[in-house]
Image 1 (cartoon, rainbow, N blue to C red):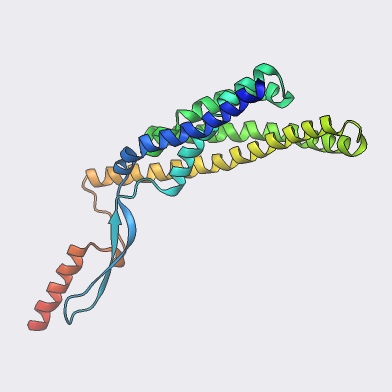
Image 2 (cartoon, rainbow, N blue to C red; image 1 turned 180 degrees about the vertical axis):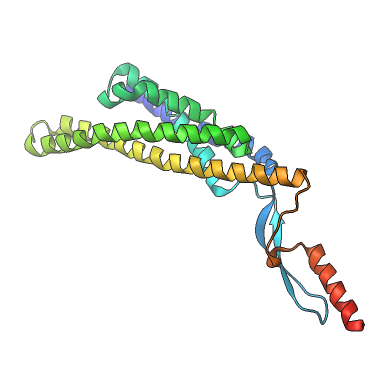
Amino acid sequence: MLSSVILGSFGLMLSMPALLWFITWPTARERWLPRVVGVDHIQRGQFREAVVPRFGAVGPPMAVRLAALGSWILGMMFVPGLLLGLWGLMVVVGLVSVPGLILAWRLFFLGRPLLLGEPAAAVKARSLAGFARVLNIIVLSICGPGLVLAASRVVRDVAHSRDNLGALSVLLLVTVYAGVSLWHARLLDRAAALIDEQEATTRAVMSGVRLEVPRSEESPEEIIGGMSDERRNQRG
């Protein structure tokens, strides 16, 4: 019975983020500013060839996509985490179940704002990244000695190796999850920085501030205009 509930929870944990992704992605693709997706070579007769960037509406950067998807996936851990906490199957879950469930709950609702690039999501992402680091460092400090103890018991007590292997597997699973959560915290920080960059660029454009770009990244109109000036100088 319990195994069926847990398997169903993990199935929901994977299917729900996929559904949320397909629902949110069309809007997210329109929210983010166009980015460079390649280059175009512009040449006019005898004049010099110019290389200009080609922009496209490709949606949020990869780091933001991974951070949002990870927020949904880790957020769905609220369901099996709550079940395991209620059944009291793991000591580690019992010790950190409340802050862990809070983190999972908040991460789940951060996924959509992250993918959409909402400015407030950057602040929340940094806050949850710090929270996740502290929590998972505590978890790893508990699991580390527990892994050593469980492994030693497996080696020494062969008669009860099945029970010891179960404890070792649980501790190993929690350790891996903590590592994934720490990696996701880094993604949250990177996603927050990218959202801040987009917000600064949007404000600059709306306020009429001219953004300086390298010569190789001039707009096609500027390059074509330069070609026209060069042509008039040659005629003169």
